[in-house]
Amino acid sequence: MSTAQQPTGWVGWIGFAAIILILNGAFSALQGLVALVGPNTYYRTTEEGLLMFDLTGWGWWNLIIGALLIVTGVALLSGATWARVVAVILAGLSALGQLFLVPAQPWWSVIVIGINVLVIYAITAHGREMAVANG
Image (cartoon, rainbow, N blue to C red; front, side):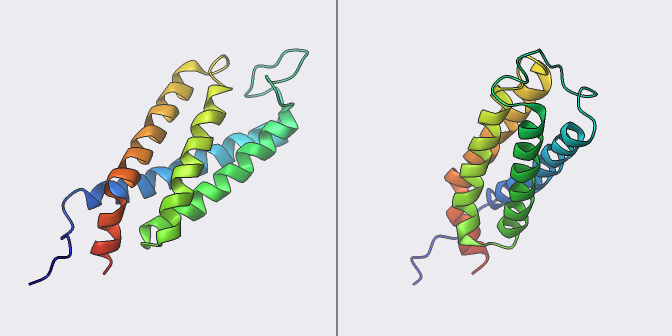
């Protein structure tokens, strides 16, 4: 008799989280490219810069976090154990980064923060089932 826990339908949430990480990464990378290539075309700035970063710094932050989110999302789809930990960390950093954009893009930021919270929930509550499903 096997005592191993059988995966449930919640494993689909991990797939959802992986796809959302990839999409979130693509959007973040796009935001970063827009900030680097065409400053003042997408972001509202003041004379002090964009909150705590200038546009170049903000662009590089979004580009780097976007690339890491994409790589982690792909690894999560493949069932890599390390990807669960990294995904939770990156989703948290992505949500924190969106807090800085609330004054400039309130609706988009709140939506992205909410989706990041769903991703963190899916991975933390049901991440072990993905390892069981991948055998």
